[in-house]
Length: 352
Image (tube, rainbow, N blue to C red; front, side, top):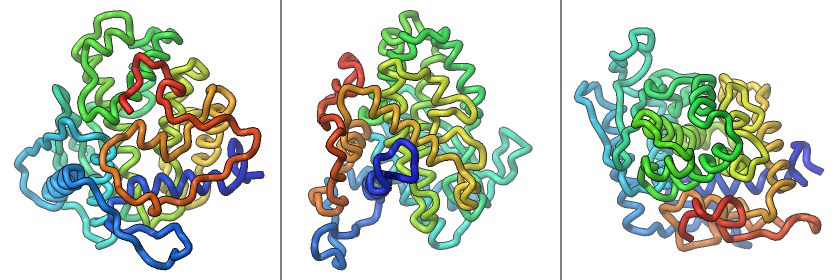
C-alpha cells in the first residue's frame, strides 16, 4: 500500500510525478527508460511546436531580464497550453539554475508590491492575461508571480459561485468547458460560455473564466517545474485535470477546487513552496484525495500520460522511451480509456 492516501502504491504516485516531470521538461535530453538507462537520449520535437516554445521563452526572458519599462504583449494565439508551460519552465529553470534575478522594475499598479517585475501580458484570441514575476522569491523560486486581474483563490471562489448561482448542473458544464481550454490555444468564447451557463455572460465574465484557465493550466503548473527542488515535484497538472473531471460529472463542486485551502484544490493553499520545502505541506493529501475520488467516480480511468496529452495538446516528441514504463495497475483497477468522452461530457470533448 502507498503512504499517500488515494494511491494504490508509492509506485503509482512516483509514476505520475515522473510522467508529468518528463511531459513538461523543456530540455533536449531525457533519461533513457530502457536497459541502457545510463545513456541520455535526444528528444525529437515537432519543429513548429519547438519554434513556438523558443519564441515565447525568448520573449519572457527579454521582459524579465531587462529594466526596459516598455510594455510588452506576447501573442500566443493558437499555442497549446503545453507549449506555454514549456516556455515558462525554460525561463524559470534558466534563471533559477544560473542564480540570476529578474530585473526589478516595480509594478506601478500597486505600490505595495515593489518586489515584482513590470507587467507582462499574454494574448489568447480576444483575451489577455497580465502578470508580474516576483524578483526575490522564497528559495530563489523564479516561478512565483502576481496576477493583478485575478486575485486570490478566496475571491475566485466567490466569483465562480456568483457566476454559476452555485448550481451543480451549471458547474458541471463549466468544468467540462474549462477542460477544453489548454489544448485549443485560444480563448473560451462568449458563445461557448453561454452554452455552459444557460445565460448570456458579460464581457467581464468571459474575461474572468479565461484568466482563471490561463492561471491554473499554465502559470500554476509552470511555476512548479523546478528540477533543483525535488521536494516540489508532484503530479500538479494531472491532479487539476482530474479534479475538474470530478466537477464535470458532479462528484464535487468547483468551489471544492477553488476556495482558499480547497479540499480538491492542488494550488489553493498558502505558501505551498515554502511548506513543501519544510515537509509540512498538505499537497500530497489533497492530490491523493483527488486521485481516490477519480478512481471511485469515473466509469473509466485514463492513464496519466495519455490524460496530459489529451488535455494539454501541443509539442510532442517522437521517442516514447523518454517516458517511464507504464504503471502496472492493480487487478481491480478500472479499464484505462483513451477516449475523452469517457472522462467528461462529450459535447465539450476536445478532438483527439
